[in-house]
Each structure stands twice: as structure tokens, then as C-alpha cells.
Length: 127
Length: 121
Length: 142
Image (cartoon, rainbow over all chains, first blue to last red):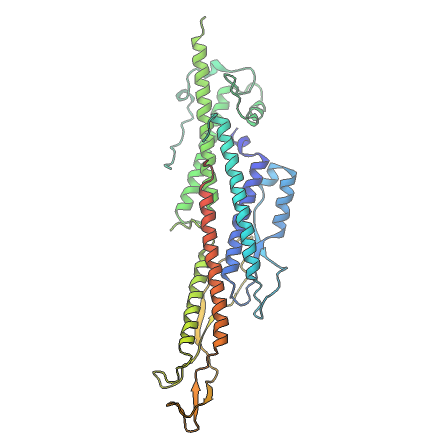
């Protein structure tokens, strides 16, 4: 019974998206910290994971969604901005962080709203 | 939030004479209050002949598991392991929601039991 | 100690590193005209060298590997002092040449700008992570 409550595709998708956003923030933070490290290659969400997330969300299959595991990978499309091979571009990282921040607010509100609605459905009262 | 002690799945502590109340259908609507439709679907998938009391027993143990998972995640976070903050918060909220569900089920059952008891024979 | 805000350990190490860099730069600038130090020689420019990235930042399972970020060393710039012709200077040698510190102000200013930029970027990361954590704590509340 509890399983059915929390296994809805929308809820699972929102949770996985939130996982992805949090992991991405760590990646961006690490990139910015290594702005001056010679030879550092920037990291981001693995393209395979992003594709899997999109596909699972579109399909709406709870098992597929639950099996997703967010992962990071070295960004192979980034080009070095300096002679020491460092591929971090500060403006790009800051912009990505901005986008990610908004995505985090969105996913958090989504998950929060779903939990609140569950509570309202159960108790008939506002939280 | 203090950890909630393990719930004793002994149903007589929740409500007496549960077997008296086995409804024909598997839905949980009592007093006209509808539970979320997903629950009705899930409970109607139970094999016929499975009694209402076993369904309640399942609910209690599921809720207990949820509480245990939440307590485990929170203590992992507090002991410094790298648990993402949102996992701990969401686990706590889910445990909360499922606990509320169980409490509401109990309340509704109690209400309808008392209503039946009040009926003139 | 609870790591409530995840992913900012390296940001704080980077802030330390950039702060050190700023200190070194301001020392260089302050001593740009010191022809006669405690040891009798002109001031020697110092520079900060960062540790190279020894390995990929991502583990095989897709999780982030966070090697501690460190300044490798602060080393002295071994380029020779700049010779300037100034016979009136008390430190002039027999030919009227004064050895000035090997500090190029323009270079130092450019370094200063890039160190400040990196510092502020890491500060923005910390602020951002903090506000994300606060949002997370509000999940489930109205």
C-alpha cells in the first residue's frame, strides 16, 4: 500500500531529477574550485545518464525510473582555455550554476508539493 | 525529530474485533471518505480471501519499514557519512506521510466501528 | 562533523589557495621598489604554483572524486633583477646601475584580477550551495 503511494511515475521522476540537480551542483562546484589547476578537465552529468533520465520520464515506467542512478563523467566536448590544458571556462560554469540553481528550486517545489498533496489527501487538512 | 519506536503490529492494540468488519470489496472507503485512488487500486489487487486484517498488518509493517529507513538515513547523515541532504529530508517526509496514513486508517476504522456499535438492533 | 552542505570542501580549499595567491601578489606589489632587502639583495618576486590534476575527477562508477586541492608551493621567481641606470641611487653599483626587483606591475595586476575573480566565483559557489540546502530543508513544509 505504501509502495503504491510512493511509486507513482511523476513522484519518482521528480526525485530522480532532484538527485541529478544536486549531483550537478557538486560537479560545477568542483569545476570552479579547480579553475587554476593545471591539466584539470571539467566534469558534468554523464550524457548517458541524461538520456536515460529523459527516456524514463517520457515512458512513465516506475521500475525504469527507480533503477536510474545519476552519474558524472568528464566532459569530452570541453576545449582547453589555457596552455596548461585546463578546460574550465568560468563564465560557462557560472551560467550553468545559475541554471542549476533554478532547476533545484523547481524540483524541490515539485517534490514538496507532491508530498503536501499526499498529506492533504490523507488527512483532509492543510499541513 | 525523535526516532519513532518500532510499531507493534499486533492489531488488537489498534482496534478490537477487526474481523467483524471485513467488507466485501477491498476498497478503504469508510464513511464516504475516499482514500487516494491509487490505494484503492493497490488494495483491490489483493487475492480474494485475503482478510482485511492481513491487509492492515501489511500496512503497519510497511510503515514500520519506512520509519526504519528514515531513521537509518538520518543517522547516516549525522554520523558524517556522505548522504545527500535531500535524501534524508525526503525520507523523513515520506515516513511522516505513511505514518499519517496509518493513523487515519485507524481513526476511520474506529469511527465506523463505533457507528456500527451505535446501531439499534 | 556533519557535511550538511555537500560539495563545498574543494570550494573552501580553493578560497584558501586564492587568498594565499592574493597575499603573495600584494607582497610583490608592495616590494616592487625594494632594492635593498634584509639580506642586502633586491626583492625577489614570489609566485604561487598549483598542484596539477594527477587524475580524472570522476570515479569509474560516476561519482565525484575530490582530491584535496592544494597550492603545491610558493616559489621565488628566479629571473634576474632588472637593471636600471640611476647613478644617483645609493644602491647604484660602480656603473651606476641599480638592480630592481623582477616585479612587473602589469603582470601583477593581471594576476590580481584573475585571483580575485576565482575567489569571488568560489564564494558564489558556497552561497549557492547554502541556499540550495535551505531550500531542501523546506521540503514538505507549506
